Length: 538
Image (tube, helix red, strand yellow):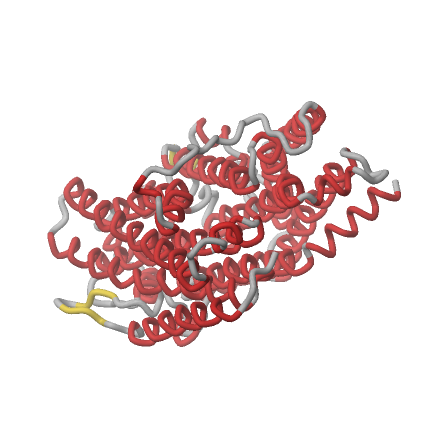
């Protein structure tokens, strides 16, 4: 029992900073829900109009929860529950991979396994650690909801949903760590399963059946194949039915049991999915370090590019939605104007909102690609390539270039998607122009995160991964949800995504693009100059 307790304490100490960031972000999102809804949809009639509009345009349900009524608490659950679940699921899956396949890659697990702890205690302590984190997350959400005046039963059920969806994806991360040959591959598998099930629940909601007064949706059978769908069908603050969570509990048990069986049947350092064996000699096109970074990053970049194209298609295909949402509802109109930063044309405003989301996706592509520099440094591959004539500055510059290119291609894919949506939706060319302007404007914030991430890799290498994703998450939440949560305009504009240029009439409103360019260029120069002077750090 003593080795188990020591390992559990070690995990708590090691994750203290990262878990604090995750929990604070989750708490901020949960705490802002009620004040935001009270400020934007304080009147029941406004909430009824919003729900009726959503029912007639079910594609919106891809990004929201399952409508279950027009009360204040029911609307908060509809708007926030999927995103609360998403945060907890990501946190738990990353935690699982970090302490299993990640430790195995770095050689830590071999050292621990040689002690009396053996091979079982590290896995068991990771599972208990992850379950404890999920329980804490659910308790934080429930307490914040209760503090905002939510009914006790619904708030408790919302917290239970966060906990059990978190444990499901803890199990997904643990199984992925057993199956895949690297922590990067395991994280990728876990994230794609998460994104796929999130989209599956949204699609199931979109294909559901609304009731007669357009305040409640019965989801289709698709949602029952997704942990997010199980949580949403508990209907907090309405039916308060905990029975769908039995599926989450059973899935958690099966995943943890399956992980234990897989762990017992493989050797340390091996995997059930074999690693790809490279060629003995590189093709002529991969003879440079820049080509090597492209080769290593292209799979993840393709995923972000496809996501960008889907957002672009939705941006123009739903152009007619804005007018129907705002018709007869001044509060909703004001919210759309605040989110988009334009009051001239609500259709244009909706396109701007979607392209802010596209900017966030492009920034994720840039951040993930730039962080590969830190991963190469910790795994020793950077030392190998820097043993050649390649300089440190050129090594880092190649990562910045590929990260910025991945971000730009994601934006371009979104603009292409907007053109496809415009053609299929029959909207005018003016809206396509607006999409192109909004997309071009988001390239600067996305490239800013590529530069800032590499600067963090140089200046604070051990904290770079956590800080880079935390900064991106804060900027995204402020830009996408700031007006909904009642944040001041100056605070919202501090987010790079909200400060990007937007279409205005027949021209372009540059907003803070000059500042963004200066900050991005400065961060890149600081990173390159700093890399010349520091040694590699494991």
